[in-house]
Each structure stands twice: as C-alpha cells, then as structure tokens.
Amino acid sequence: MPNTASAPEAVTDRELRAFLYGLPGVDEVGAAARAKDLSTRSVKTTAKARAIDLAISMVDLTTLEGADTPGKVRALCAKAARPDPEDRTVPSAGAVCVYPDRVGIAVEALRGTGIGVASVATAFPSGRAPLEAKLADTRAAVADGASEIDMVIDRGAFLSGDYLKVYEEITTVKEACGDAHLKVILETGELATLDNVRRASHLAIRAGADFIKTSTGKVSPAATPPVVLVMLEAVRDHHRDTGRRVGVKPAGGIRDTKGAIRNLVLVNETAGPDWLTPDLFRIGASSLLNDLLMQRTRLATGTYPGPDHYTQD
Ligand SMILES: O=C[C@H](O)COP(=O)(O)O
Image (cartoon, rainbow, N blue to C red; front, side, top):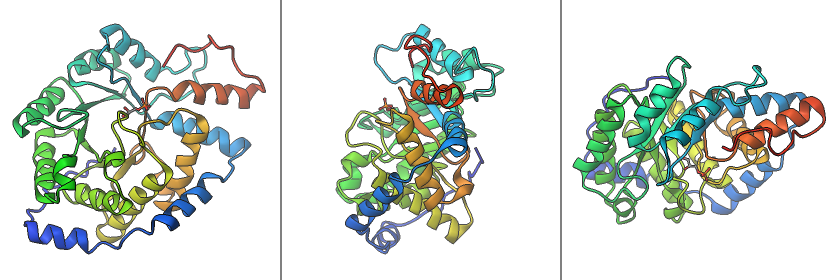
C-alpha cells in the first residue's frame, strides 16, 4: 500500500462547500445502467483463475462481532496467512480486520507473515462519540500494531451539511494514525444519494484518505455496484487532477466469487488496471474467502471440494 501521507491542506467552510457543490452531479439512472452492464460481463477460464487469485490477495479478512474471542481472531489470522493449508499456491489475504482491542492478538498471530492488521476505529460502526474518544481508539489500535485504520465518517454531520466538521475529523484522525494508512468509511447506505457518495468520496480524499471504503458491513445496502462505480470515478478523477492514487475498498455483503469478480471488472473499466493491486483495491469481507477457494478448486479440478474441506471464515 503506497504511503500517500502528505499534510492535508487547511480549508475554510466556504472553500469546501464550493469544492463539493462544484462537483458534477451523478446521473443515477446512467450510473445504475453502467454498473449493471459491467456487472454482467463474464470472465472465464484463465482470466477467471487469475481474477480469483487476485481477489483472494485483496480480501481484508474481517471479524467484527461483539463475540470475537482471541481464539477466533487467531484462527482468522491463520486462514489469512494460509487460506488453504493443503495448497501452497493459494495467495495469502490482503489483511486481517478486527476491533481495536483485538489488534494485539492479530499482530502476534501474523508476525513474520507480512500480512498487516487493519482495525476499525473512531467508535465503529456508528461514529457517535466525542472526537477525543475516537482519537484514543485510533491511537490504541496503532500502538498495538495496526498498520491500517478503518475510520467511519460522521454521517450526521455530513447529512446536515457540516462538511468542515467531517473534513477536520478525518485530518485529525489521519494525524493520529502516524505511519498507519487510513481508510475512510463513508457508510454509503446512509448517504441516500449518489451525489452524496461522490461528495463524501472527494471530501475524504481531499482530507488525506489513503483509501475510501463503502460500508461498515452493519448497514444495508452496502457495496452496491453503482456506489462502487461512483467511488472509483472519484479516485480516477483525483488521480487525473493531482497525480495521487487513492485506493477503494467495497465492504459489506460481498459473499461470493461472482460478487468479487464483478468488483474487479468495475475497477478495471473505471479506475483502470493500475488499481488491480491490493495496494489500491481491497474487498472487506467476513465470509467471501471460502467461496473463492471453492471456485478456485472447481476451476482447477472440475469438482467442488466437500463442505468440510475449509475452515469456517
Ligand atoms: O469491513 C468489512 C465488513 O464488516 C464485512 O462485511 P460482511 O460481514 O458483510 O462481509
């Protein structure tokens, strides 16, 4: 993941509004049609095998449950490092994503694997807490070894038009991240319109996000194709205008190979092939990996492995 950290510019409320309201509006019908067209493209045989391995390497293998035990986190880490213990050709996952109080366990379990630990912070998933609490949450995760922080934006502030508050919260959390990369979760299911998704994407990017992420996985709808399309357009346009590449992470409800490959087609056709790397594209998912492994085996051998072949995601 490239370190795109550079001090975000100070901005006034007036400048920020002018910037966000100056963005072109999203044609909702056109975006839905384009996303549908790209979603139905078929990817077959060799290209499919490559796409499956790429998707595995992009998975942020996630567990975000109140009931997460140390044992569950360790099992998830083992799976991220060696998704199929019987097949060394399977790539490892992109990262493991856990709550802040589980970061230390995950860091320990992944030591020596080169796999990073991402942690949701800033009062995930609601984001309803004082800024000091959000910063403490972030600093604790980083101190325990998280190399990536997935923060939520204040949707209440965004929807009431207090864009500067959202912007400044992102820049402050970014500072608290130190060397850790910052993924900014927009929670698009609560943003109501694609115009808002576009504005929130550009706001987060301008505030210094290394990645923009669709959803927490706790709100539906989550990573719908039109939303991912609009976010990919935002990073594409930002790169065109500034030369800086920002990543995208759809998350929430991506549970099968078809859904994962649909996302890769969207990336290729929108942001372009430069984004087809775990440095710039991740898929946040708690239960996608097994389907990718099953489809991989099916492609290679012609048959599906038995239901007990893989450990539970
Ligand atoms: O950040 C990742 C999401 O929480 C995962 O959502 P999911 O459980 O629907 O795959």
